[in-house]
Image (cartoon, rainbow, N blue to C red; front, side):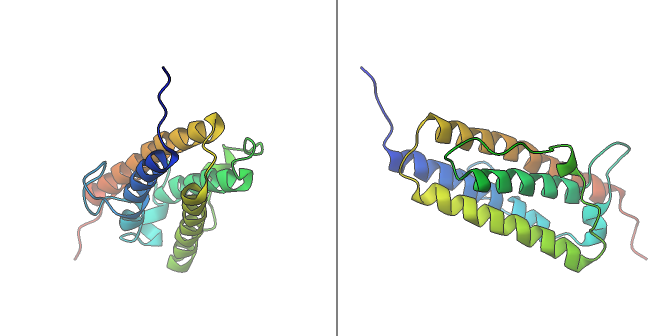
Length: 163
């Protein structure tokens, strides 16, 4: 006998995890204050663009990569695989020079997340393609959110002492 999960149960669980990852930590998968947008709100452009080590990406590069991923998923609209993307280029965000530039990048990520969340909340057809994409998004975004948190910890440990 084949058992299925009702769409509303899957969708509710997915939205709860996405909200916790991006919006607000709530002890389901992240501690309070550790969600992506909560974390990014604590940074300025100088912190966001500082690589944490040789060959390491900056937080701004991680954010741009996440934005690229969400943007591609939004462009695909769930009806077909995302268009070919130069994922290597998604790590390069060279135009962050001011706090305004940084806030624009975070706002771009916010819009992409809000769009994707809206699609997930309204989609009724959760076929294998959609479920695969949702699980891949959670896994991939979780890894990069962890990298943002790790980078922030390193930045704070190595920050010059205040006078």
